[in-house]
Length: 83
Image 1 (tube, rainbow, N blue to C red):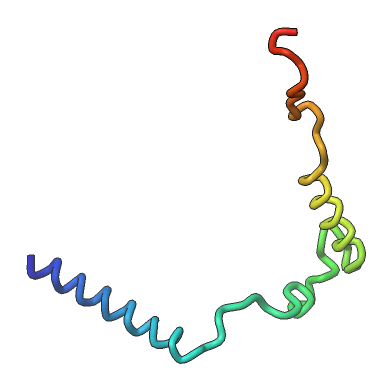
Image 2: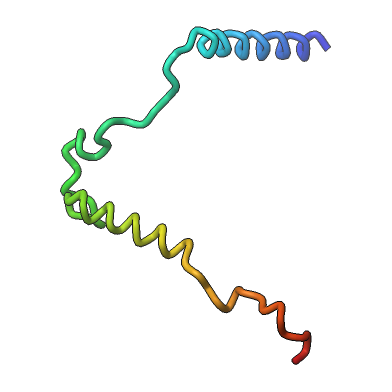
């Protein structure tokens, strides 16, 4: 029982310390600026080959494909069942 209480106290202490960072208004974790470009690996991209326009176009196409209308999934409510 003592071990359980010690673990609980330690976890509460950790959560309390982390919440201080939130209360102080610290900047949240964010992605890097540049990504592969900062590492000099932009040319190694299999999709765009280092051209940003190609990546943007590919992302646009993927987004459209996800939201495309698929008539086989639609239900015709005007038809009678079994007809």
